[in-house]
Image 1 (cartoon, rainbow, N blue to C red):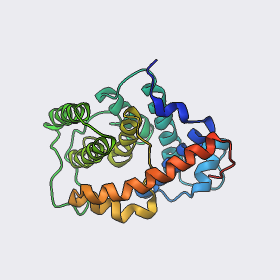
Image 2 (image 1 turned 30 degrees about the horizontal axis):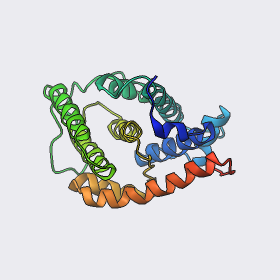
Image 3 (image 1 turned 30 degrees about the vertical axis):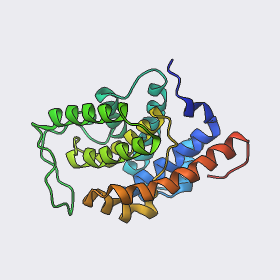
Length: 235
């Protein structure tokens, strides 16, 4: 079993809390209309609180499963292309026939002024993305530099847009995995920050991305400590 120092600070209650918040906000960024409380009820109570679309319900279940898979895999394995494909496969379970496979048709990002990678070049682009990112992380000299690399490669991932669907949610879970693997405090991009986040992706604005994420990391650090001290925080 690999030793990832930051994971040792996570209580079960904090992991549940992180799961609910990240599932809600990451899905909401993509248009899911379920509330934070509805998401919590589905994940924590295994209950459907209200009438809702099957798709939105499955998006919650799948995201929760993908996050749990990610945390389990990190205990024993480094992030690799297989893990990334599995995350997408779980996210799109029962929602997309091509779940977990790189795209076979061209896809586009609404409002983008660039083209995503073609289906034929996607496998090469993803291997190049992965190798370059790992090289830079391995040779980084500080946590701040690691954070900048992770954010930069999140933007690059979204511009490749390697899957038929679920690229945003997959990309944000990869960011979580990379933060943990590099012993950095995780963060949750909230739906309230959606417009700013989308603008960052569109403009490849690393500096604004850093200024968005750093306060979120500080908030998360406080939350981790509070749960560790058994403070009763409500999701």
